[in-house]
Image 1 (tube, rainbow, N blue to C red):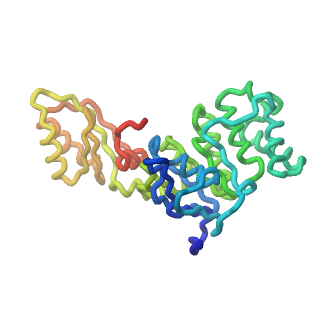
Image 2 (cartoon, rainbow, N blue to C red):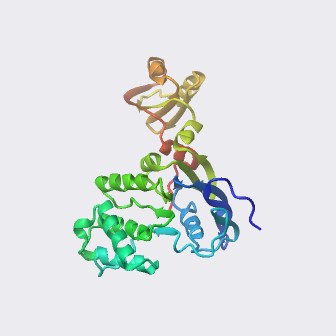
Image 3 (cartoon, rainbow, N blue to C red):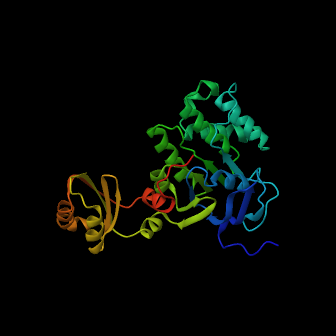
Length: 315
């Protein structure tokens, strides 16, 4: 029996579990998305993002748990949900306009409504000049934007975008980002991405998962604050003969400054850290290292991501 839904939640994922043989792809995963909000769904390769998306869209049955839409289970999401998959799915021999109209009619839209929606989306995604061109003649970035349009042609309430910016040049990426923000006031949007900067710019809330489990859930700023307040000071060093790494770790740590050493880069974090630079520089010099450069920046979502999932490369 379905329990009481969280107030304001359009999408509610409850305790989802999915196994493939001995592998647990999704492990007791829960999160909510409210109307008019954008959820950034982040994780390393193999974290369980695509499996979760497939269960959310009804393409894969969970072993345990449920997905609720406006507080209830939906037998059919065809008309309410639009999915833009990571792989580009288009009809190469149809023109951009033809396939948008065809897709709209498959969602039981009247021809006039489908044509009107197609024209608007071609304009919004800067494809109007390609209206009568076959999709096979488009660049990869244009095909990606067309793929997004195909997910939206039937005006769905919930939109799922799986890596919508993959393969886009900077100009197209900015356009897609602005487009997502513009439609988010009227839609509920879930999108996956490996671009932490874009997730920070677009998302109202972020869920970071790894090995099928939710590691952290909150606003981008809240997540950045969760790994420590203050700015990040990156210091490049050149190690000399009597380099003492343990000395740097101990003395900088004694100042109440968070420090992480990666090869020849020191990552330090603290409030008002710029005021502490002379003291830090003295410690580094005394510990047998030469400073080669400094960079001061704010905490980023990438810092949170690496802090939670580690630096090990995934296959």
